[in-house]
Amino acid sequence: MIDMHVPSVTQRGQSIIEVLIAAALGVVLVTGAITLIVPSLKGGKTFTRVAVGVALGRGLADNVWAWAESDWHPIALLATSSVQYYLTTSTSPFAAATGTESVAISTTTYVRYFVLDDVRRDGGGALTTGGGSYDPSTKKVTVVYGPTGAATTTMVTYVTRSKHRIFLQSDWSGGAGASGPVTSTSTTNTYAT
Image (cartoon, rainbow, N blue to C red; front, side, top):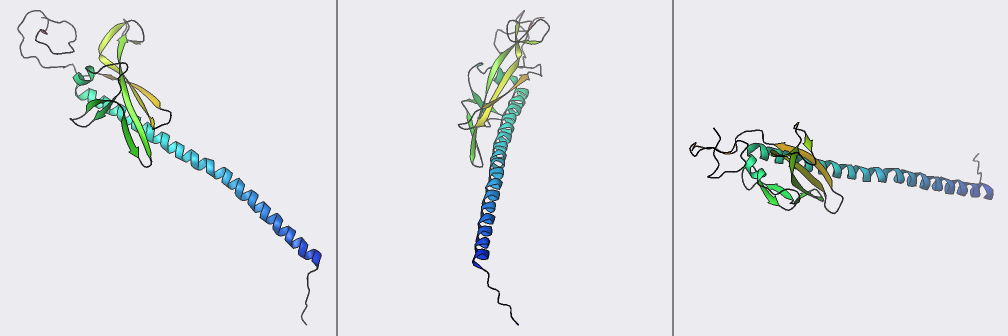
């Protein structure tokens, strides 16, 4: 015997209401999931941009340090306080160029440059912002970096001439000369006795 039970009109209406409630619940759950996932994806992209920017800034600071370590004279001759520089590899190991450098990584272009400032020291040798004596063997390096069109970040470091040799002198004649550090070559520069 086959039971031919046909649902009543009220049972069919109840099923439609259940389907509509389930669909509405599904929409709410999917919307909530999207609301949670999208910001985390944007945050991940922002984190990546920040991490790449920091790596580019740190790389430039390290290259300036290596350049100053290899030969102090070119860095000592650069203008200070307002001129923007970046490093090129046109000469070994580096050469300074004025302006900003653009670096394209993936779909983002970053800018980076550095500015040099003279350093002054107090009587005890500590760095000072005002007064004190000019230190020709130390430069303050401010590296600026960030995605093009976005806010930039700065990183400050110092480079110091660690090698005592600025230039070689083969002629020791000429009488009394400079008793302090000599920062440039000249035919009048001779050493004190």
